[in-house]
Image (cartoon, rainbow, N blue to C red; front, side, top):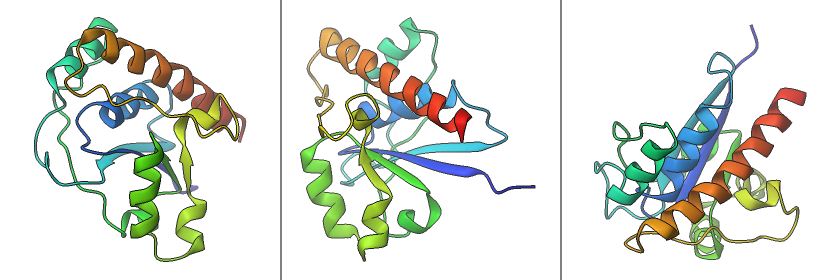
Length: 155
């Protein structure tokens, strides 16, 4: 039996964007073939659930992310995951510092490059910015994870 593909969603604190991306992609792929997780590049929120607006936004779209807990990204995540999706330029700067070599960085991509190839567009940080910001982020991540799921099915 082939090994499961492992995908990691990464943002700064792992309490708004990356948990949404994790839940969205999980809802679109076969869990027997693909593992999806998320992590944050800083440790401010380790152990906390996703922020209230992200939980509420997810719930409005039929996703429950209340059971997820923030965890810190470690260099070992480069070994554990096949693909690592980041949300913005600051995430790129931080993850480059954690990378041990070029092979690590080859696993990393901006999530929105899946719908806007090579543009390195950012998913804005919706933390403490209200429902409209969380909804915008949800819609961006929904479109990107749909593209990722389609790509994974064709592999």
